[in-house]
Length: 443
Ligand code: GDP
Ligand code: MG
Image 1 (cartoon, rainbow, N blue to C red):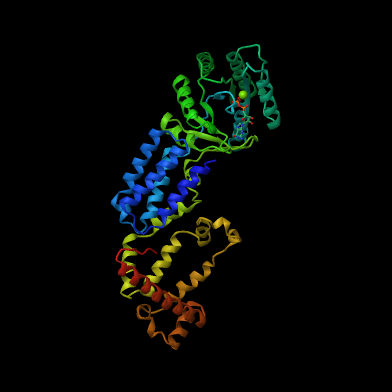
Image 2 (cartoon, rainbow, N blue to C red):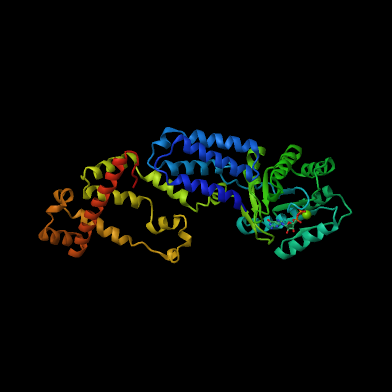
């Protein structure tokens, strides 16, 4: 799913991500491509317009442009707004305090209601320890009752069916009584669909709804139908009021427009997504994860967030000044180490980098954090003067430092060499950037 959309957005985001300086024109260019990508993915036009406007406004904010990593900030804004578009937080399922909880599955024919009824029962049993009862209330197609019975058998979950000669409302009523008697705490009603929305169907759904106010009314829609799915959602919501959406067939070749429009148009959350025909192919919908997936960023954005919360930009600027004037000391070095450590275990950070999953062996990579501990110990064993002017560290001082830090003279030598190399390199880099006069340096 989302191939085209992902590819386009990812291309656009990659272009802007590395930018050390982002101009208004850059943002405009990017927004043009984002708009194009969304329209092509069959996202509702009104939604596209609003999205583009919001991102542009936020991206133009001075705190973005003045930050050390404006390109990355813009990408983060796009991701935040994509997440918001899909509902922000993951939404919870409502269970009743009065037994049983009643969940109605509604939607057009072929959307995936019967399959999803089974999948949902399986998921609720597994994740929420519920005891479900499936209800065959699609009496218009004999095959529909059989289909649900087969699903129930596969999952070993009970199915309440009364053939096709009585009304769906009566079946649902009896099913709720049956669930009470059998202490089954979650009744999931598989209702009939139609090819199109019609009044008879809506009346029937209203009658079932009137039996016991359902805790959830899930509309099942086929993601492949794009904007049609959004229209269907709107109609069902106006007619009977839905509490959430299950978007099916996201495993297929869908352009993704429905996922991005439904929430804004209907104000109803996507709660689950169908990812295949098998009965375990139902996932809880996480807006943020979906946004990351669309942008193909893995956990890159959580990494940016981590860096953002842990790196003090003022300090970073002071640091740059120190490099430029060669007044960088071991104390500054320690501070840098502390900042990196705050971001979390290094091997986890490594794994969050995009493309990291493609690097063989990285999944087992262990960054030697004891090495970092050694470095810190060595620096702590230096005197104040040694930290600011390491040139004075002679053989005697090295011996003392090694003893004090529980390391060897080689360790001390290695660190001193690294420190000198680093200073040289930083000096060159900041020299370059000040000559150009615009390229900012980040850590
Ligand atoms: P209903 O008419 O709404 O009850 O739809 P069904 O549950 O009978 O599903 C219609 C078809 O869609 C069946 O062939 C299902 O296997 C298929 N289907 C349902 N959900 C998914 C899904 O998430 N992915 C895929 N690939 N197929 C699905
Ligand atoms: Mg069905």
